[in-house]
Image (tube, rainbow, N blue to C red; front, top):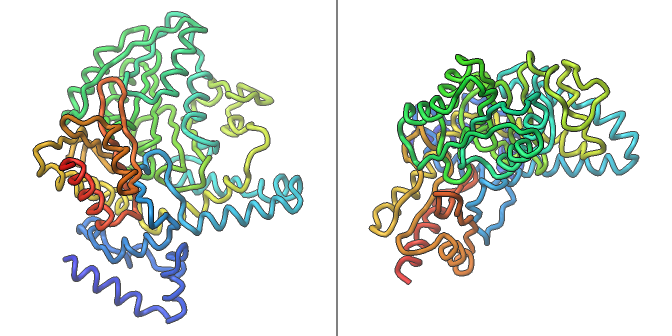
Amino acid sequence: MKTNARRTFLNQLAGVSGLAAAQALLPGSLHAANFSRRDYPDPDNGDFYDETFWHQVKQSYTVSPAILNLNNGGVSPAPKVVQDALERYNQLCNETPSYYMWRILDQGREPIRAKLAQLAGCSPEEIAINRNTSESLETIIFGLRLKKGDEVVLTKQDYPNMINAWKQREHRDGIVLKWLDFDFPIEDDQTIVDAFKGAFTDKTKIVHITHVVNWNGQVLPARAIADEAHKQGIQVLIDAAHSFAQLDYKIPDLGADYFGTSLHKWLCAPIGSGLLYVKKEHIAQLYPLMAAGDPESDDIRKFENLGTRSFAIEQAIGQAIDFHLMIGTARKSERLFYLKNYWANKLLELPEVSIGTSLQRKYSGAIGLLQIKGKTPQELGQYLFNKHKIHSVPIVWENIAGLRVTPNVYTTLGDLDRFVEAVKQFIQS
């Protein structure tokens, strides 16, 4: 199957004119040959294994050949086509800022909103463009009309910025935080759902769900939790920083009332771009974080009163969406899962190794947590970078400890073989 897929791909390249084929293989120009998505390997048939295709994807990035980046969970690099767009828009802005920003590029926001909405599977009137997940979720957390005694259900494994935002509301307004504490990985939906459901009371107003836990990549059954919450009239906020454009879903699939994500993670949009989703029926009752002319407007745009910001970053989101669609969400998602399991299964052959992440498709994606018996995450992380120039991130948070390893679409199997060999040398040292 791999051989046939590779032959098909190469035959398709041969069918393009010589100049177009050459351009298609240049960094940032993979889209130039104008292939349809049917021309690429079909993820349903397992062709996401095809290394020829993914090597071409890598050529569309400008990542360092010296440093192996396995911390794409923090922030991902943008493909060159996105970098070029960002620079082009930025240069345009600097010709006459107030003219090109407010009269030219500002007119491009609605088309970007429409493209994001199509990707997300919702109405453009439910999408606001901002700078990151923290800004999106804090807009919700501080904009909800909660009063003293109202309860919020969340977990100790949620992202620190969100935990601190909820604690601030607790301090200021006297709301009650109901904490769950999970011992991940968990490979049973009902265990997770029952824990959330058991924390709900008649005072619970909202549940905070981290769709993919950033520390170890655990995927939570967001829709099942949301359904239980809605049965009791509880609203649902979803932190999708690590799931949007990594997992294959549409926002309505999750049952979210509110949703936030960073586009500079798995969509590979410019650094400092994010998305806020608010279900249409809730917009009027949610206060904007930055003051708007009418704070009770039902127009999603009231959440975009951010003052002067980079219009270049915003506009280059369009090129990131195009690049993402060239690969396809399903193919990308399957590839990332395959890469995680590739290195994890190789290292699990060693008795000193354990993986703090599920290897089942339902409960994980790109992120994996590597644990070495008798060694700290910091020791492993420092060794890998100092000796092998492999960049990853040590994790020590609540009951989770290990080295978080996160490849991306430009990561090849050769890169992961390099990582595996370096870990073996660390264990033997």
